[in-house]
Image (cartoon, rainbow, N blue to C red; front, top):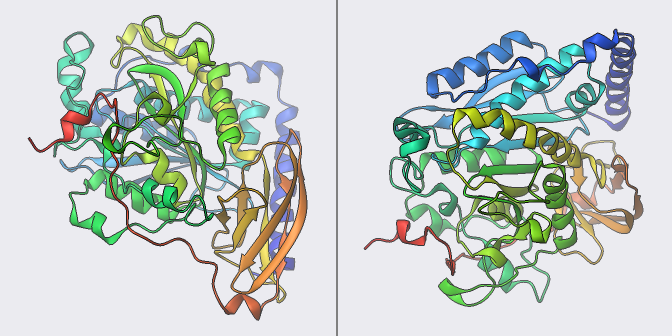
Length: 466
């Protein structure tokens, strides 16, 4: 699609959205009442979970799509609910966001919070809540309630009162899914001094010779298939918003210490957004746990180092920025506590999603008006880049400020000054010489990864071949 045609299409969509917003504004005030007062707060086994997701699609068919990214070891579908005003389509310039819950089967808050969030977004969109309408119209949202449905069934068989600290944690192969992703940190760390291999690092071929869980494989394929911009995966066992890197930069298996990324200040902002909007994460903590003395946030490796985690993989292999959210001291709270957990987390879930719209975004085209995919977008002074998607659009999360930004494809480059404010992302488009984009290359990182382990990882012993 050429630039003029793309702009015309985008303009028609925006006009339609504006008309819809005006119609919603005319709704009576009663229609804007919160819908969650009627929610049922209970746990959902696999069949019941699917029923809730299907019910949301039936209640809001125009903004939802239910799809599976694969199956667990025992054949359970890894369901994802998409919420968007054009479900099933990537809209030019619209960022994509995801939440992943229940990665560890016995850490269950995220599973139920995501189901509640899906119902809330559907109900509030229908009721004309302007905040939710804007979020749905301007964001493609993907909600995965459970990454480890098999593990949850094991934990649920014991319930909240009889559940052990690790019962149901792993998948049915005994694999800890948050230690099963390609470990790309060592490649990134070796290139820090030269500014190389700081993003889009290929998966080493040696990774596939190990045991890769089907749930992990499904997530990797999912990440490679959608242009995700921002994400969070949900856990329990503490109360904190954890940000990269998770793997210590020195010390081998027992290494420790704060492991900074090129985006450390941005990561702190993102984590703080969730923590401060939460009922207790940044203020009083969780009673027997928490990081409220640090504002409810922590660098992963500064807490304890782990290898093969999902959030670092997102950051080093794709364009996606992902936090790890620890949502409570008790991994499996009683059903009677779920309403309170929803109250604590509802605003955080929304506020964090809205962060997908900060920084800069735009479209990279060539001088013939064609979209340029895989153009590298680099901010001066920051060695972590992002790439343009298939339609040429890109998103770069940034803090407020003025930046020198360069787009590169082949031998073609263009540099612009882009100013970021405190509101919506600044549009910063690029046009590259068509002939020059076909020559040379920008490189996306090379090398092989090795596991550096983690010092005080409380679950390291679960993954050892004794």
